[in-house]
Length: 419
Image (cartoon, rainbow, N blue to C red; front, side):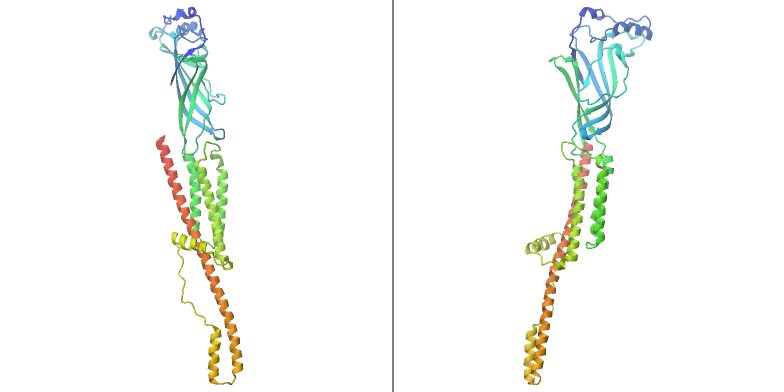
């Protein structure tokens, strides 16, 4: 990146005219002679190093990013960026003959040279990098000034694809004493830095443990639903996962333009575990207490037993129609009475009385059997509904895990190919 700038001040041309067409003269080809020849130039460090004030000084800026030491997510800033800033420009007063002076390159103190006041607009703190006290002079008049910078710069973070995100941060360079040669406005040039996050740390510490826990919860469906160990096992998983999220909270971004997908994934994992526990509680209640329930409403039987049951491959079981037929005891008593009448009147009253008593007992037994059969049908329906819900959530678990893994792999591959 290059910027074309002029100094905003004016200077006496007669003062610098003596250096317009001559080279530095060295008495001997050694460093002391070279330094002695440069002393008059050092006295001109307060002015832009051009003979003619209308001459444009071309300042070339190159920046090398060695690493991002940290990201302050809560401030939405890129923190501790270790960079090297190299500036080059022409000093018309520092040209010499390499053969006469014995060298084509010499290091001099920066305080003895004119330096452009180039700053980075996004700086949010003081540069704490060590200062380099020297700059290089080349025989053709080029000044090379390289400085390390520990920059804390403002940068908006797009964390939607965290931790597979690629951040594009702008560093704009500005000067308060230099003007553009075209419109005489303040110089402001920007470069774009693309940063790719090292995702392996977050994959190993966040995604893989979450995936392992949700997979273990998936296999907990193998346990019998009416077993108390299944509920306690799921509660232990939820407790462990909650503690895990609290411990790993510092790894997650706190602010951003959108909610990261990883937050959605972790929330969905916790929601699936809680739903699994609630479903286990409901099914256990169906299996253990369904005998106290009345028969399920018709819309529930249609929705679960006929529609969802066939969808999850648990259709309603066909009932055995060869039930034991209990004959009406009153009919039996009448038939027995006719038989006794045919036999004769001997003992007729006593026999009829016993038969009527037996009929009342049989009638009570029949009512109890019918009530038991009705409760058995209601219990079977609620148990079947519970098993269908259990199978349905198991299928949803498999779909969620499969879609999540495929999405994570696709985002990971795309982010690395785009970098």
